[in-house]
Amino acid sequence: MKLYTSTRAPNPRRVLMFMAEKGIADITTVQIDLGKAEHRSEAFAQLNPMAQVPVLELPDGRTLAETRAICTYLEGMYPNPNLMGEDFEERAFIEMMDRRCELQLFLRIANCVRHTHPGLAPLEQPQFPDFGAAQGARVRETARWLDGVLADRDFLAGERFTIADITGFCALEFARGLMKFRPSGEGLTNLQAWRDRIAERPSARIV
Image (cartoon, rainbow, N blue to C red; front, top):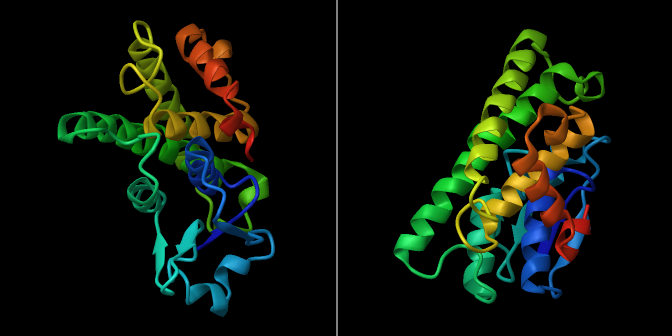
C-alpha cells in the first residue's frame, strides 16, 4: 500500500500518528508538495478528485481518501492496539468525541488559518479575513469546553488513548504553529497538561 501525504499538513499527520501507534511500517509514503500545487495536478486527480491529502492506495489499485475513512480501514487491517473502540458502545462514544474534535476544533482552526494567514493565500482564494477571525473565536470556545472535559480524565474519549486524542492533538499542534495558540496562554491548564502528555508519545514526534 502507498500513503500519499505531505510534510507538516495536519490531516496526513493524523494518519501517520495513527499508523505509528499501531506500529504499521509496511506502507510506503509518497510526498505531495502542496506548495507546488502537486495535489491539483492531473495525475493526483486520478487518485483523489477532491485534490486533498492523505490518500491511501490499496494493493488492488483502489484509492481511499478522507482521514477517518483511512483510519477505519487501517483499524480493520491492523486491529491491535485498538484505537477506535472494542464494541459498539465504546466505538460510538469514541466517534462522538473524535467528530467533535474534528468539526468543532480542527475544522475551525483550518478555516481560521486559511482565511487569515498570508502564507495560505495562494492555497485559499479568495480569503475572507472576517470569517477567519470569527472561526478563531470559535476555536477558543471549543478549547475551553475541552479543558472542562479534561478536568476529571486523562484522555478525551475516556480512560485510554484513542483516535480522538490523535485528532485533538494534531489540531492543537496545527493551531500552535500557525495561530500561535497555546492553551496555557488562555488559562486552559487541563488542556495544556493533556497536550503535553500526548506530546511525549513517540507517535507525536511524527510531522
